[in-house]
Length: 119
View 1 (spheres, rainbow, N blue to C red):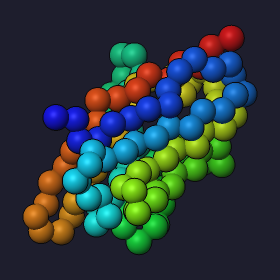
View 2: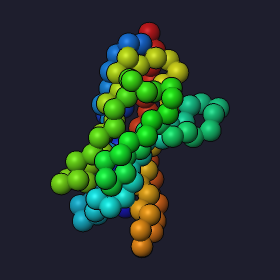
View 3: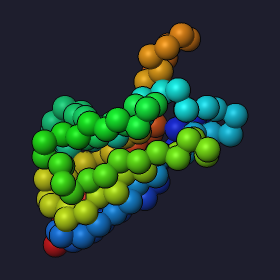
View 4: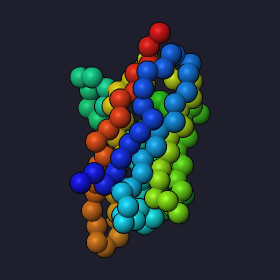
């Protein structure tokens, strides 16, 4: 069963924008979790892009500060990543990650969505 489902990836030209969505499956509650987006470029390790905790505090990788915005809507257990002014270095598979840090603790990953920035 897919619990976290990403969508919104695709091919975009440099300077363009995309909005990624991560939606939890029906019956699954992410309100108490820290939600994050990670990405993995070809031949590279997976890296944190942005996170938002259950209080709304956000963290961004230096490479995306000022261009990406992470947000969450707890009423529908959804997290978004607005990506603006994309460049070729943003190419990769973007994964949604859930980290519940209070008992019961667990982590979940989505299956990923491909983002390709190319002219």
